[in-house]
Length: 247
Image (tube, rainbow, N blue to C red; front, side, top):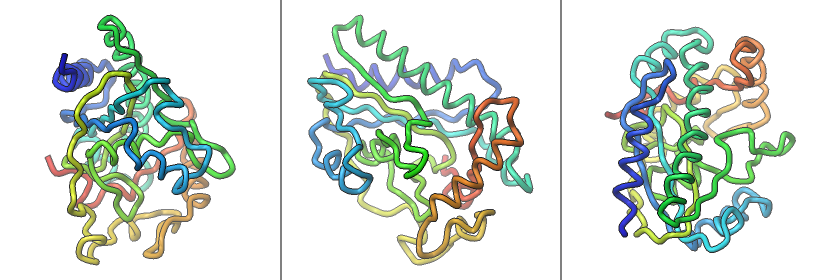
């Protein structure tokens, strides 16, 4: 049974049925071989603690990654706001919850077909000191062909970068998605733009790179503003430039 189409359609259906207040555009779904050497490279790029697909699920064959792009209304609200728009903060919390719901739903649905699945939560799966995750959904998305990293360390997809990523691992084989060869980031492609650097309210992002500690310090400050939403360590001002959305 070819699972690529039914998995893609089911994820799209679940996003379209989301019960929150956040509007979404149609998600993107990609696939990567669990034994792709790039997953092993993450142990060097991120750290030896980073998990392999087989660590999440013995017998893993495929990593499924998906991108849920925010509706243009959410992006417009965040662009207008001097700080972080409430719509953006709500989108962060609701989408993280939605990603968990999707992964659990897919795990149950695939299990009925005799396919095993495993996943890591959408966020807050990182070391509080090093700020390095045990499983990078964004890196999984790049390996699965959904996009490429921009200068701002966000993944830019064919639908932009304003949204959230999720992923899960299954023990069924699906042909890997082709990876884009061209850069989407204008700075990487043409040494132009740097909207993200100019927009960073913490000065954490420069032409030379990202100061993760300064960035996270800013996120924790924002979280104090939205305590009624739960842990809402979000900013995203760097993701509002020309790469925010394409479709």
